[in-house]
Length: 208
Image 1 (cartoon, helix red, strand yellow):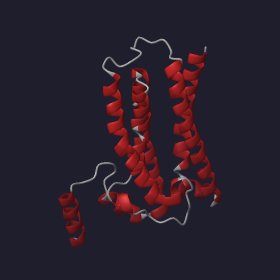
Image 2 (cartoon, helix red, strand yellow; image 1 turned 60 degrees about the vertical axis):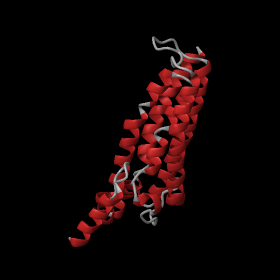
Image 3 (cartoon, one colour; image 1 turned 90 degrees about the vertical axis):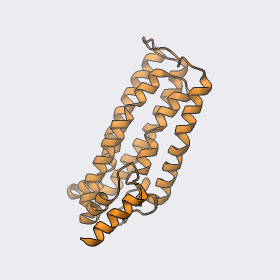
């Protein structure tokens, strides 16, 4: 019973994450409907999504002790050291991206504000460093817990975070207008361009 309830809870919490994270990245559009209180409301949506991310981590740990019965193997077929090493290799750069993204975005990470300007720092290299870092966290937890099923479930976050990023950018175009469109055109979404590629783009833009 615990295993089934935990698994159902996991699916429900995943839906909560999608709903409230998407709602949290749309303050400019919501402002058109309810005024500046939209930013405060979106901050609450973001808090709910953050709590849900924590709850899903707890679900993963509970699943380790109370797995459901599936045709999939309970553990990866190779030595656990290999799995843990893969998880660590993924987690270290992911945590760095999240740290840099939070540092350079400032309080906007948790509390969207109308007066906040476009970010600098790592955001001059890629547009979504926090998403690129955070998308791997569930998978690394699944790997540390040595669970193939949790690893498969964690793949859900890759299209989810891509959708979150697209939804956020639609709102940023409303908020910043042409300035964000130009930033979006010159800055990659997730994968940094080679340095010479960025220089070529800057020369091309300078000549326009």
